[in-house]
Length: 238
Length: 156
Image (cartoon, each protein chain N blue to C red):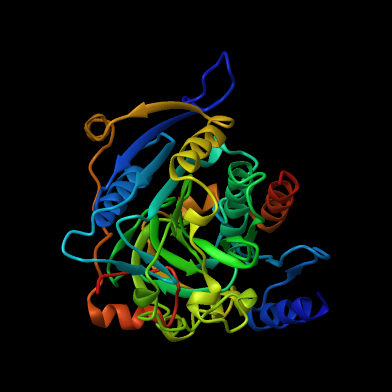
């Protein structure tokens, strides 16, 4: 039995970290550290982000601005035994979790690898899978500026359901479907049906992780050009 | 499925090994050893060639990038030494045995899809000089690995 399991309830423990306006790079570095150096389960909710001197950054087809919501789930494989440590299995699990969140609100579904309302994407996902743990990271498109969206080019790899639609016809704004606070509350509640949640502050995290070598960093423009040919889910600073 | 078995037979013939007949399941080659993290090993004297199995590539989806280790780097049994990137996910590749990296499959940089189309042949990932030949005993043979895959898939 996992050491994180609470015996009397049978649910594995998960640490909940609620951030507000944490810079995206800081969040990603934190997630990498927690994935590689912690043996706990984690739910990280970043309510908006601080892009410092940037007005927005691009994460694939999702424009990230200060209103973007981020939710990441880091799980021990043994604490989610019905999920195989492969992308489709993890996404099927996360899709069912978010189905609870959006139940009765719009036509939510997991479509290929995206979260959509109907056929419009509002959430971009990325995952990293290690031997015994995995992280599922989602950037939720709360709102966007149509003029900023014009900067995006059509990626080389697109989901079939996109059907050659340009960005403005392909994505939608989450704010048109659900209140921000309601989304956060319902997400935490949905996670709480599978884990015993314990809220931690950022300061409390530092002591629970051992040292590790960071590999997350901003890409240079040359590296960016190389990666755009192979993946939608990349981080770039423009 | 017939096409997959034909591919496996050709691969086996080239490698001069026999194929375990698993019907409609993923391909497992006899005479290789397997880790529970779904990497395969071919031992040749004190050298070993690794890759990921047909089961793994099938579950990962289309591989778009393979992160290869540097030559001369040490790898340890069970520890990550690289990664494969498929759509929306990066997955660690774990070393089935310990040793020193003596060759990497540079072709994968331009053609990462070989991991999908030819996981036991052209999709090999690295070759190492073994540091502890005894570690091979901890790995599964083809029959045990086949059963392992069936049990894993049955649970989900």
